[in-house]
Amino acid sequence: MNQQFGEAYAQSVAKDYVIAELGGRTIEQAFADGEPAKKVWQAVVATFDVPSSLQ
Image 1 (tube, rainbow, N blue to C red):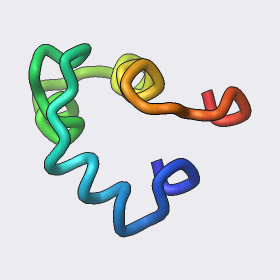
Image 2 (cartoon, helix red, strand yellow; image 1 turned 180 degrees about the vertical axis):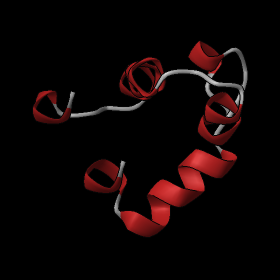
Image 3 (cartoon, helix red, strand yellow; image 1 turned 45 degrees about the horizontal axis):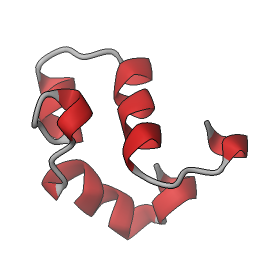
């Protein structure tokens, strides 16, 4: 997340951005619900233009 968005913005994305692939939850909510990091990152990749080197 920090490599993709920068440290400050990554925190904001994790806390505030609702991602459809996570069932309409934020990254923080998905982790709190026990979703695995790989699934969460795949949702981030599907939602944002993440370079292949970070996928």
